[in-house]
Length: 229
Image 1: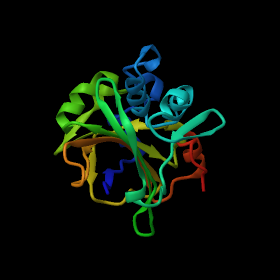
Image 2: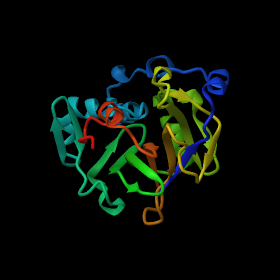
Image 3: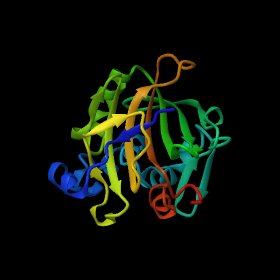
Image 4: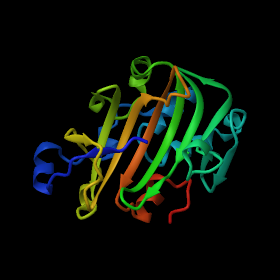
């Protein structure tokens, strides 16, 4: 499990080093012009919000040939067996969904730990190495110019101050790993990294939202495919 943590900054320091940006102003791509289903899904995922699930809904008739799909209102999602368990939180596609990359599965799991907080992971399993995938999908990524290499993986990290919701999500480069999220903050990160050892030659492109407690209203906005607790 990747515990990816953004170092907490005060609101003054945050304003000085990373002015708050909305998804619409930081986006480097508008995926409506794309014609390939795989490319549209990667582009929509890269926002790490409701857009992926709206895109799956728009193309659910074509996409249900690859994996089971569930629909709730105007959003759809690929169905995994059990979101609470990592090994049951992955569905393999019946055949690759091919665009700039070859998508072979979908991951969706939401562990909760008393000592660490709440985590929501969702995204795709893709054939290829991390560096190959990063180069291939870079033109599709929203906020692509903020993609940073960190060791063996790539990230676009964002911070949300629950005490200053007016700031929204702010792009943040001051990151550390292996610690619990600071109180009254949430982290949202797009992560490109190697899949686990059971899948050699596979890279995951995942979104994560995490915090000591993730408010239901945040989940309702970012993850309309699941019922907020």
